[in-house]
Image (tube, rainbow, N blue to C red; front, side, top):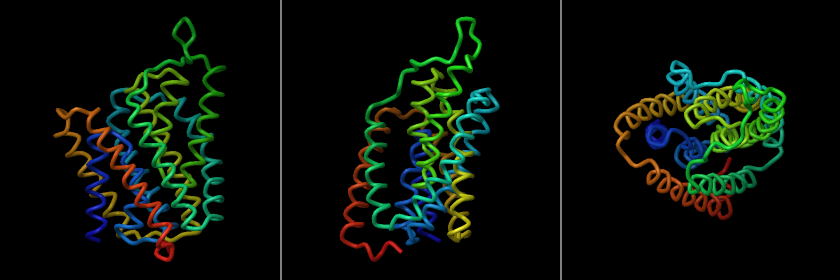
Length: 259
């Protein structure tokens, strides 16, 4: 239980200071910090990611920083593939899954090191209204990819969703982040439903992890307002790379510990 609280502190601090991305460390934290088997860690991660994103989405929804139709299309497209990702997850060994997860972490770190994205794509017509003929295919295709990653690895996918919303659909960053949180809730719920039918959840661990993460995220978000976000993002990216290397080495030399 103490290990779960410590992991919650680390993930919550990352989420509070960076506004996202911290959930990529949830599965390694649960496997190597708490000692859960990989399959159970993925399921627990989906619960933690979903709850954290839901709480984070509330204040953004209150200030109209969620584009609800796009969130609905994007999220709905990912529901089916979240189940598909779960099916592939069930075919993979814990060792293979962690090798793949380490590779994903490197991709996430590279995305963080690249910095903020500048909105370029646009779903808007010249008169300012949403052009659904362009928005629907783009939202659905991106949602398919993110849903699969959510089901496969138990990650929120914000590192893919936010750039997709900004670059493909042209949403400004505050709107992209708020909309991303709603999409993560939808995908995490679908992934959790798929995994929970095959893997039990250690609810005391999950609730402590999620509760501590939420509290620390709120505190870190309040006190971290004056910290340079770009510097924090770079530091965190290098931490993710270090954890990815650790995960790959551990999966290679100590596969019996993966459950």
